Image (cartoon, rainbow, N blue to C red; front, side):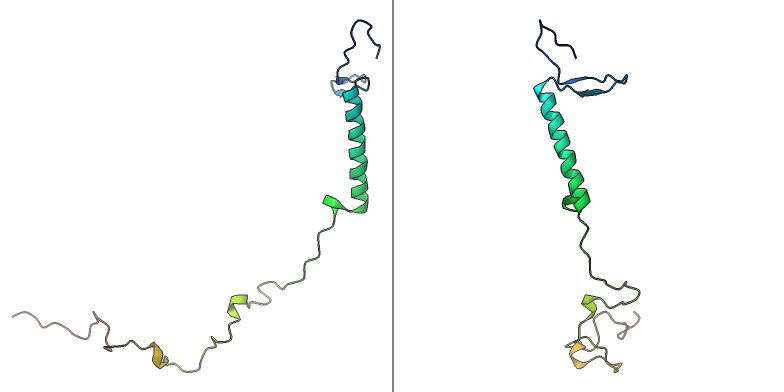
Length: 115
């Protein structure tokens, strides 16, 4: 790009000379030169990380295999050894209500009809 003698201003971006409407870094401007060098360095670091599979391109850790729920339906909260079912059909004595044997409001006492 020809340098103008009366004006030392060079824009950071200039239109591409290839006939497109795109803008490119202007290497005659110090900021444009710095952006070009930073862009190339960033691209080289990312290519290295991709090749070596490091950083964000690292393979995920292997997780240990666990069976699906259909294959092994035991859940951690089901593994209580104290809650084993008993063969008896009657409840234990500690579960009977204390006091009267009939709960209030039961149908055992029917009121007599009014005369």
